[in-house]
Image (cartoon, rainbow, N blue to C red; front, side, top):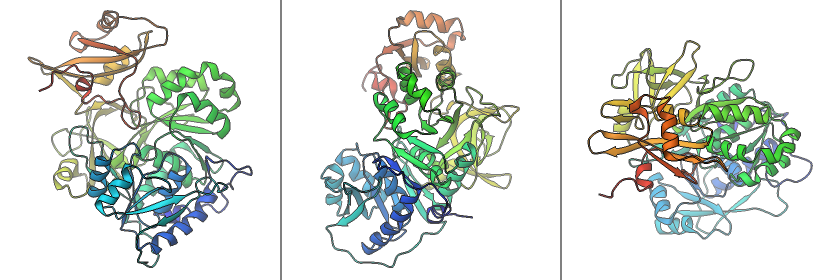
Length: 510
């Protein structure tokens, strides 16, 4: 059994070769295997060993995917968002205690400036014009002191990511090689991936979704990945034609943007049949799932994941088992349970979703308070509190009520934003919606919603509120509805509920 990325990459001797024709976006399993050996030797020559931390700031694409997989076989990887400013890079590089930073050969931007200020070595990735997709060589301008090449163990940290930190200082999440391999295999099993599968990746590769679901799970199956330079709805169907994928994975807002352009790309959809589509990282509205199934004539597999679980926790199964719209599926790797929100015990009914398994992080780094709050022992197992509220039905399908921090408390009445989202999405004119808490002087919080209308559709705030009032209890009806051209999103394309009232200027500054 393979428990590190090194051994995972050596598991398929009969994997598909690289494409005959050169394609600068197609990352093949075979090409990665040969590149990994070169990178390990190079990094050890630079004095980097498995427990050293190497930050990676590369644009989305095959080089970023290849850098993650290959550098993790010689060091601890820490992918960072290429859109950060210098002060953000300074924070993350210092917080990570990074030994080196990997950038493209010609990059002299804010990440390089931050590394110079902190005295961190800069490694430059060079890509030859005729090189296979993902292939690069590394150089450094600084002094080096070689160390013997070492292969990491299952208990070494392969990947470090920070939590989003919407309301507090981001927490450091270390993920072991054993965590990554367990999660990659869980996803491979859930999706029945084989060497013949080809993933079209549009997810950012500084985030757990793309790194594990698109890249690592494909490698676990001996498959391949076509790496887009990011998400662009205008270019998606052109990429689909070029990549000829069997599947893609995305967040709900990306799926909605793809749906909006689907009618004018019917020929491509027919010419490139997908085995399935996957959605994760945020709840997929049931209406969007239904529209995707009808448009692509393929099952939509909604999954439930988070960084601390090395991505996947639950997944709707492939046919012939049912996909339940509004559910994130059944346990798909770790064991999933429901815990009392205040007491360290498992319960039946609604409560906080907890998980236990080989894909779960050993704990936040240097944060005993967060570890005490988020981990507990029960029934002979170690459980992680996800911070999500939900229930398991009679068939063990998991449904989310929402983030516990996002539940709206209106004068003591608890309201699930996801429930209100689902109702408003049934309005014929509504394309996107995110329900959020609006501070209120007497009730504490009031219900509000930001709405994007369908192209060409018309509806007023009163129209939408009246529609909701016919279908929801009075205390759940949004008192404030903001109709917008676009709802603010985070770096990974997810709509952000926490802090949305402030972002929209609905709260007076203190």
